[in-house]
Length: 275
Ligand SMILES: [Zn+2]
Image 1: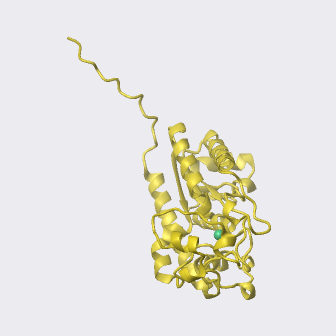
Image 2: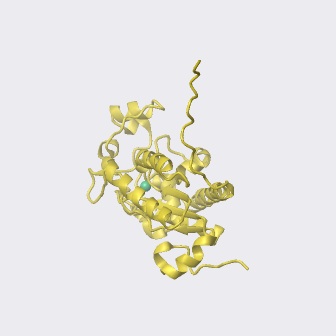
C-alpha cells in the first residue's frame, strides 16, 4: 500500500509524522528566493513564491518521495538595493544559511538534497556552497537549479523582448500562474526591453554574451524591470512552470535511481619504486 503523508511540507508536519515519512521520502528540496523589487506591478516575494510553488508541485507529483523544507525568503539582491524595500544577504551569510539547512536535513537522514532557487542573483553563491557541501557530505547526492533556466529553450521561443530577465514577460507569466496575488496587472509597465533603452554600460554588457559586467537595476531601468510584462499571460506561465515541474521530476527520479553515494576512498598511495 502506498504511504500518503498529510503534507510534504516539513514545517507543517509533527516530528512523529516526519519519522514515519522519512523512509518513503528520499529527496528533500530547499526552496530559495529573494525579497526584492520586481518593478511597478509585482510583489517583492515573487522569486520565493515561484520557487516554493514549483517545489510543492514537484512534491505532489512525486508523493510521497519528496519533502519540502521552508523556503529561505531572502537572497543576494545587492543589485536591487536602489529601490525601497529590497533586502539582501551577503554571499557569506547566504552560503551559511543554505549550508546549515542542508546539514540539518543530512543529520536527519536525507542523502539526496536539491536546492531550488527562484532568483538568479543567488546562483553563484549556491553553486559555491553546493560544491563545498558535496565534498563535506561525502555520502550525499547534492544538486541545484534555478526555475527559469530549466526551460531556457521555451523562453527563447516565447519571449518577445530582446532585453529581458527581471520582471519581464517570462517571469510575470510564471507569477500569474503560480499566484495571481503577486501581480497588479494594471500597474505592469514596459521596462528596458531593447538595447536602446539601456545606458552605455548596460548596452555594452548586454551586447557581449559570455561577459559579466554587473549593473545596478536603478541604472538599468527606471522602473526596476526589464522586458515587457504587459505581454505576460497565465497561459504562457502554465506552459513554462508545468514544463519546469516535468523536468525537475525527471531529474529527481534519476537522482533517486542512482546508487547511494559512498564516501570516496582516501587518495591512492603512489608506490614508489625502490631498487
Ligand atoms: Zn524575480
